[in-house]
Each structure stands twice: as C-alpha cells, then as structure tokens.
Amino acid sequence: MPAIEVNDLRKSYPKKIPLPFRRVEWVEALKGVSFKVKKGELFGLLGPNGAGKTTTIKILTTLLEPSGGSAKVLSYDVVTQAREVRRRINLVAEGERTLYWRLSAYENLRYFASIYYVPKDEAEKRIRELLQLVGLWERRNDLVMGFSRGMKQRLAIAKALINDPDVLFLDEPTLGLDVQSAVFVREFVERLVREEGKTVLLTTHYMAEAERLCDRIAIIDHGRIIALDTPENLKKLVSEGETVEIRVKNLRPEKVKAVDERLAVSEEDPTRGTLILRGNLDEEDLPKVVEKLIKAGAKVLSVERVEPTLEDVFIKLTGRALRD
Ligand SMILES: Nc1ncnc2c1ncn2[C@@H]1O[C@H](COP(=O)(O)OP(=O)(O)O)[C@@H](O)[C@H]1O
Ligand SMILES: [Mg+2]
Image (spheres, rainbow, N blue to C red):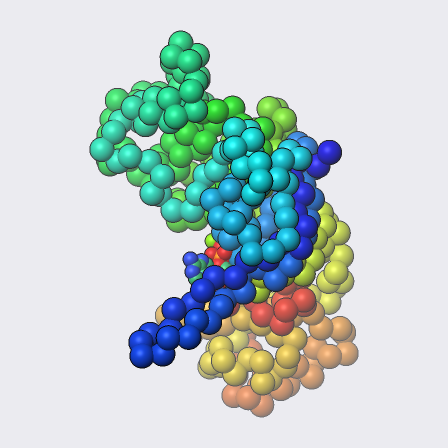
C-alpha cells in the first residue's frame, strides 16, 4: 500500500471579475495530477510559483476539496475519510502564520498537543523531546514573537510532530530561511525519513534542495506533472556534455528567446548588468549560438560546459528557467 496515492486530481478556483461584470471565471490550478508516494519515501514536488504545489498539499491534508479526481493517504480517502487522514498526518504550512506569537514555544506545543488529545504526561515528555530535537529547549519559555524566522520554522516542525504523524507534509520548508536554518531543516527532515521511518512529501522551488534531499521528484508546472523520477534519472533527460552556461553582458532578459529558443535566463545580476544563460546545445550549435548572441548586441563574457542540474531538465521540458 502506497503512503499517498493521487489520481487525476483537479482543482479550479473561482476568479472574481470586478463589477459590473458578474461572470465567474475559473483558474485551473490542477489539471489532472497523478502520483504515488511509497512508505518511508522522501518525495518532492518541484515547480515554479503558481504551479499548483500548495493546492496539492492542501487537498492531501484535507484543507481543501478537489474539483475532480481522488486522493488517498495511508489508504484513506482525503474527502470521505478526512478524519482518519488527519489523525495520521501533519503539515508545516507555507509562511509563518501557524503559531501563536503571543504564546511561548512551550505553550504553543502544549496547546497543539491538547488539540490532538495527547495525554498530559505523554505530552510533557514529547514536548521536551521535540524542543530538544529542534534546539529550542533553552528558549521554551520565550514568546514566539521574539523568535527569528529560522526558530519559528523549527518550532513549526516540532508542532507538526506533536501527534507523531506517519506522513508529514512540508510546504516550502526552507523558504525565506537563512542558510544555517535551511541546512538544519533539510538535515532534520532527512533524519525523520531515514531514522524514524516517516514518509515526507515536501514542496520546493529550490532545485538544489530537491535534488539533494529527495528520493523521487515530481516536476510540476501549470497544474500538470511533466516529469517524475529519481534525481539521477531526471538528469538523464539532459545529456551530459551538452549543457552550457553562457555569461553575457548588454542583453535584456526578454531578448534571450529571440536569440535561441533553447536558452533560458538562469540568473540575473542587475547591478553588474550580466545574465547567466543555460541551455542544452550540441557541439556544432554552440559557436552558432554564441555568434547569434554577439549579433544581438551581447558581450559574451564566458562559455562553459557544465554538469546538468534539475534546472536544465526544467528548461528542456518547458523552455523556461524555474525562477521565471
Ligand atoms: N484561493 C485561491 N483563489 C484563486 N486562485 C488561487 C487560489 N489559490 C491558488 N490560486 C491559483 O492557483 C494556481 C496554483 O497556486 P498554488 O497551488 O498556490 O501554487 P504554488 O504553491 O505552486 O505556488 C495559481 O495560479 C494561483 O494563482
Ligand atoms: Mg505554494
């Protein structure tokens, strides 16, 4: 039995059109998403903003009903057996609004333990363990209000473990964190899966994070899964030796596609006026592309063959860089 099973999931949101136009338009956030996550797997949903990652997580955690298709978590249907699902899962939602800022770290966990009916003695023990695990035991009596973004996220993770869930959902768990906190969160999540046997589904738009952390990754774009495999296999979609990184000056990002369809802007440094372009080009094409760049008025600063990353997979599949 898979831990998560998603079948042709669809979700449309009504889009309000301002008065006097009273018609309703629909945004199709999910256009038929299917995938399975095995027990004990660390599974990633990777995609740009607006791809449908949060919508998928909200449906799987019973916060939102799908418009079509179905989903099961631990073989329970997320719509018709929502209570059974909720008992066995937990979620670290996007952003930092899931904690009570006027309560201390300890009081927050105490409160959430009571929501899950964790018996008092057991709760005390678990809260202590969790706060120690996320390195906040010394700060347990401080108000969350005074916590850094990283500390809040660590507390949010402790909170999500209070009911000892079998499946944990993490929506952009490292978004907006400083480097050190992000490393802590990634290593912590890895340990939850490898040592505690939890199943984790996380979303991210950081390719390196997905690549390093996940057993398998579903790349999602415009409400559809466009590729699903292990990071190694996904990278086989772009051939080694053909991925290039070209650093240019004097070229506007919006002009890049006109020069060559296969190029995408991977990084932009507005202060220096430079762009880093990436693309999959074979041996013979590279000089031609460089020539076209020069013709378009660009100054080519460097050309390098690079190891393909998941970003190159995304560029190859969509023609766009993930950050666009
Ligand atoms: N409550 C909502 N009402 C209307 N549209 C929404 C709502 N939530 C999300 N959307 C739209 O659905 C699409 C997918 O959003 P979301 O699932 O949040 O993507 P992601 O988490 O990958 O950034 C986007 O086009 C977004 O604008
Ligand atoms: Mg999101």
